Amino acid sequence: QWLGPGKTGVESGAGASPVPGLDPPPVYVDCFKSFGAEPNLADYYGHACALPFHDHSLDYVVASHVLEHVANPVAAFAEWYRVVRPGGILYVVVPDRRCTWDQPRALTPVAHLLEDFARGTTACDATHIDEFAQGIDWTRFSPSTPAEEIPAKRAELARGLHETIARGEDINIH
Image 1 (tube, one colour):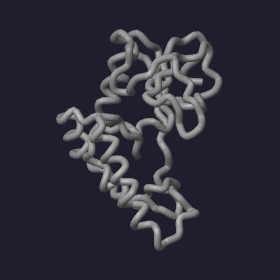
Image 2 (tube, rainbow, N blue to C red):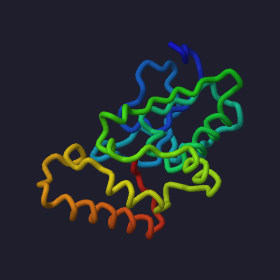
Image 3 (cartoon, rainbow, N blue to C red):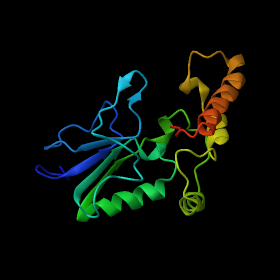
Image 4 (cartoon, rainbow, N blue to C red):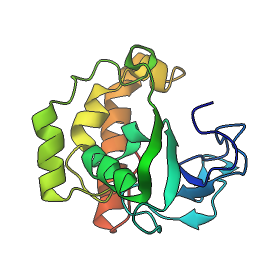
């Protein structure tokens, strides 16, 4: 209802489940070609922090369950603000952390978010890997994993993410 018909916009990270009812459909931007076995709906492959649009050229930016995956949320907000027209809308949906598998993790202090922004943190950055792997509630993340295997699975997850970064590739974590 806030976006209205006939508006021009972008949805970042729609994956295979875009926000319904946008008319005309937005331009879909995603940084991954698939999520699990599902191919992502994307007109352009790129990052939420580097959109391929002119300054103030869009009526809205939609990001549903994306911000918690962005390594540099302040940079994402700055980019979304850059591309939206004065009076435009940033429509951002984030999960209720009480219902997520990383709920036990400490809240990220604002100072840390600002530090990531100042450093230019990208999705190819190992800063948050170990804290992420150790902070997962494994009973929600992978319920079928036996309790005695969880420490090894945490280490395996962290190792795999570090190897991905070492190859110069982006990672997708909360």
